[in-house]
Length: 202
Image (tube, rainbow, N blue to C red; front, top):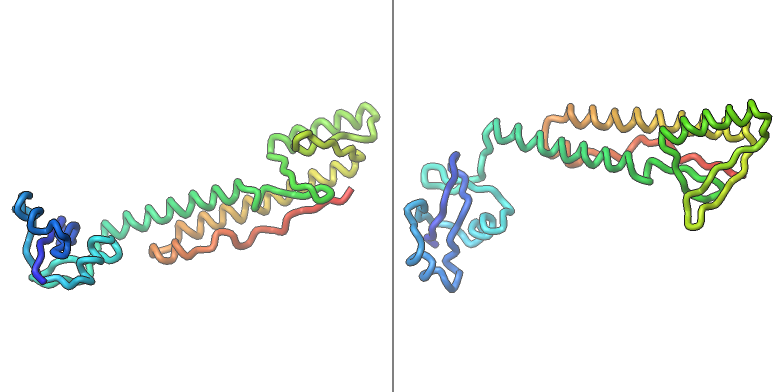
C-alpha cells in the first residue's frame, strides 16, 4: 500500500504516515508533505518504523534494512560501552560485592573505615587493651566485642578481599573497552569472577 515516509540523511526512514490511521486523510491534507516521499510499504514495514523495532532505509526506491555508517556504529559502540561500564561500577559498589558476614549479619567496612580501625586497634593494643569493639550498623546498632588479634585478622582478610574485587572490577572494565561490537558489549557478564563473600563466626 502506498503511504508517505520521511527519510533522514543516509536514507534512513525516520517517520511514516500510517494509512490505516482513521485520521490519515485529514493528516495528509493538513501537514506539509514537502519532506515526505510516497512509497509502497507493507503493514509489517510500517509497524517496524512506527514502533522502532527495525531500522529501514529507502535505496533506489526499495525499502531495505538500514546500514549504519562507520561513524554511527562507532558512536553506538561507545554508548554501549559507557552504559556497561556504569553498570560495572554500580555492581562493584553494591551489596553484591561490598559485603561480608559477622555471625550471619551482613555488613561492610569501606577503605577509610578499615584504615581507621587498623590504626585504632594498634593504639588500643599499645594501651594494653585486649578487646576492641565493632559496630553493626542497624537500628539500633549492635556491638561486637572482639579480641584485638581477631580484629587484625579480620581486617587483613577484608583488605585482601577488597583488593581481589578491585582487580576483578578493573578487569571487567578493560575487557568491555576491548570489545568490538555492540552485541558483545550487551551480552558481557560483568558479575562473573568475584570471590565468595567472607564470613566470620564469633
